[in-house]
Length: 152
Image (cartoon, rainbow, N blue to C red):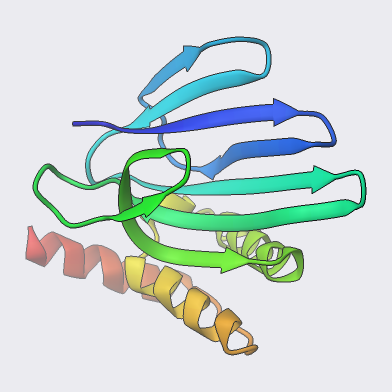
């Protein structure tokens, strides 16, 4: 069972895009619409932005883990069936803060989809509380990789 995400890009009006994640399937429906798929267990970031004549109506980022058949999941618009929510942030200033966290992780040479899921939860909680998240480090990542190795 793959998790699919409906993407749309209408310049200046609606933008739904993937910030990171390993896409394993893509179906182009038109110049502005496509569907992408993720294997079970894959982590990805889905950004949604919508504007009207009067400015931004919606800006959100969700970092989700694609679920395995039978697992519980959260429903998210445009994501079928849904995913395990690691982070859900609304409001452009906080969305920008998450994008900056992702940029800093990539600057370390770490793929954001390989980051410890607990870190994304930490970022969610800190930003929701109006606090600055602690940075992800190479040492933390090495510890996560060892933990993951032991758990499997």
